[in-house]
Image: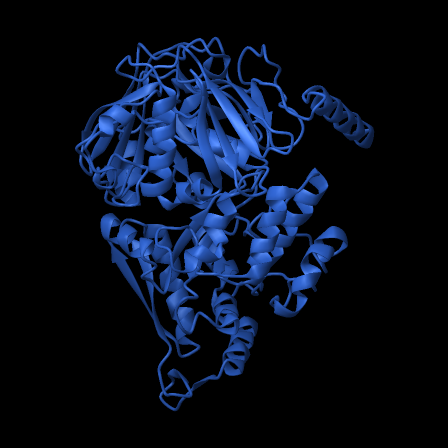
Length: 605
């Protein structure tokens, strides 16, 4: 039955795609665009399927963050910024539905049109689109935003801008982007850039903007108040231009969104228990079960919600900087992974209930499968066989310990790997190379990360059994951000969320440019031709089957690269929140993902 339904769905998608294309292959202006096939929602859709169009307006949500901030501009490399501002305080030409792998619907743009092979994309602005100061959004604003972000903005924008061969105004409210490479995803990626008001930045240095400029944007929320390093408060704009858009119905229901900042996780949790915060995500399953029993929960004033999802696990753990010796040797990295006693740490920290990440795309259809590579995955990897690390083709699994503190079998394996890499323990019990240099390194942590500190303390003790001296350095947020931007670390905590539709961002995460270019997400410093080839296949796959095979192949390359020591997999979200904060019963496939809270939440007495 499931197979029949799947075949029927594919047939309908194919028919839709045919109807979506004109006789000459050029796509007519449309209300949305999908990476594969046609958008799930019709042009006359009422609201996103996971939003409540009848949700009341009003109320507030207050969340907590560990750390500090010294900038309100999330679009440049300089400074530490509340991460939520990038999503709450800005809008783009198209908006993403989190109930489809990768589909965009018109937001600032009323329509999107592409060439027959998506070699260009054209957007037509809505006549009603306005900035928060009431001025209209113009094509000039759009073009200035794209060029400025692409040349002066954060590296996350620069990769896509390099693929734009031409940008031109094609009508009073229309702009076209023509690409200089084959990349089917670019038609979607280019629709997701934030649109800024050109006049606000006239005669100002965009790259130096910190706390001096309150952004004028088109978003439903505007920054109302802030205190550097302490809090940021956003209020719903009563004159927001897009309230009646189908994409916006049932979203942006809360009057106030406030982010409070704390020195560490303990202070944050105590503030939540005291009622200073109204919502808190908990990542530790044992803490969720054991410490969320305070009076407000017992009285029913705070609700514990479990939110499942179908997205990939992403990667969370401790990344090794392969730009530096000895982490440039995969055998050393493999030894350090074996020395990490996950089963013991998991039992100590979560009571053993938190599953481990097994690969970058685990928990999804995109994840690598057990055993040797087969079919299209093998075909894609075969040209790189001689350069791939052990396990990429033959099969790979993370080492598993017996759960005891000694971790004897894996420590023996680590010792052998280190010996192969020409490291040995001398009479003084110190691991040294042939030059007599001791194996010493630093684990860099952001101030306030108490759980990560507890994990690394256990790990440091395990490394001592190998003769390795590791130290843990905890520094404040701004200094930490500066160091990781410059890749000035040996090992540090690392988290990268991955979607059901990986694309151009993969180059920013794992591409060769990130070895030397500062500010990318390639903290491990990898440069692997097979990875870049798989990313290219992902971007240019003509079928979903090839796209899945290319992603599974990339997953094998990343996982067997042994760059990150993976820890917990967060396959559900745990959110404790005030009883007045509610969300729809219908959950998107991405679950508690970017801006689901607070986008579709509401406040109800």
